[in-house]
Figure (cartoon, rainbow, N blue to C red):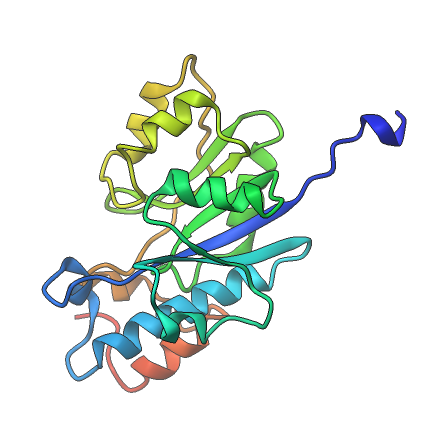
Length: 219
């Protein structure tokens, strides 16, 4: 096969830094005595470090709302920052940066194994999208070839990572079965009970680990 017929893959993993309202569900996972902003940033930084540590992948940050200097401060120099409020907008912005394939990753998965992201990219070899479902509903991550096909672009205008039945709705929108394969599921830290999923013996999540030091992970 000649070089002219080879499509160069440009892989991006973007962490979605969504700042919630003080009265929103995000506060449900914050242990008593822990500052909510510090907790949010610890989760974000650990999740970002997962993306930044992957080989042959460009890490990026998606900000919603767009003005989050504290979130930008946790990234490595030169990290692309996308200011978008929708998944379709984020995918389009990453494509404009040169991405041919991208993963959008929830910021509250600080211990996600990098292998899970690799499996999502691998699935894109035979499908236009792939997903990592979250325990308890929604998605941990969504991967897609870029630009998005029309059916996926349309579906993502109504579906987000927090949509409880996100995977089912994306599959229902696909023109035929098999277009949104599922990788291994994982957990997100959305409630206090979810902290029990953290495994002290698992490498990574250093910022979250330090913030929770001395506190029980299980109630």
